[in-house]
Image (cartoon, rainbow, N blue to C red):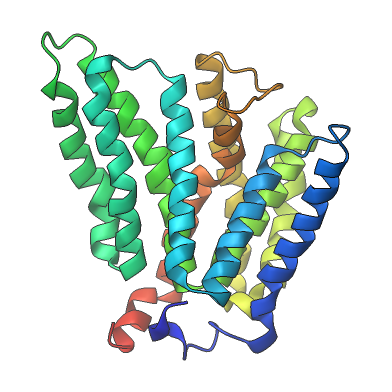
Length: 300
């Protein structure tokens, strides 16, 4: 946790710091049980990444934020690597792809040091300027350049920049990150169970449950009642938007959503629910909680 937030009343409430660790251990036992079933049980992919995110937040609370944020960088790298393995890129695009990979440590370092102003423009301005040039370096005739630039920039924005907002939310408070993580995981569970009836039933079931969960977490997050309700309404809608978008991308790439294999959409599908929710919820909470005033007030 950042030292400059240690005195903020909602940042630490004693025993509550153990909650992410308890959830991590419980989910670890569940996944171990599934593994010992020798294939008779197959956990959905999002459970593995829920475990990974809980591990990140436990490390942030009990060890240091620095190794935690670099674990999140590895998750972004895996997502981007899988995406690049599925799309149609040319050999000439290799410098652009390298630039996209190098953008991950560039952005994550800005999260680590808490440089919000630079973080927010790191990908949409600097990376998006550099990568189109890198794509053209080995290009002789220009055919396919526009498509390659769009493919690389889109993947970088979705699977690195959007997930980076979850890392920055954890920079302020692991509990605020859990306010995003737990409702999103619940919405993913509901949408998976209700997929045969379409997306609307999952949305209608998820809305009241997520609102209740957001209110239940208020003593730990410190989010006021009204904004907590709004976040609870917002998250199920954003989860549906993210899943719909990634589902269309998977269909375009010829991925069978009913039989996801390693390297063939499993990571993208597991993270789809976070892509819209992470940046929008982050900016809303940052505005409501006035994080910039808190940081300035502690001399950061």
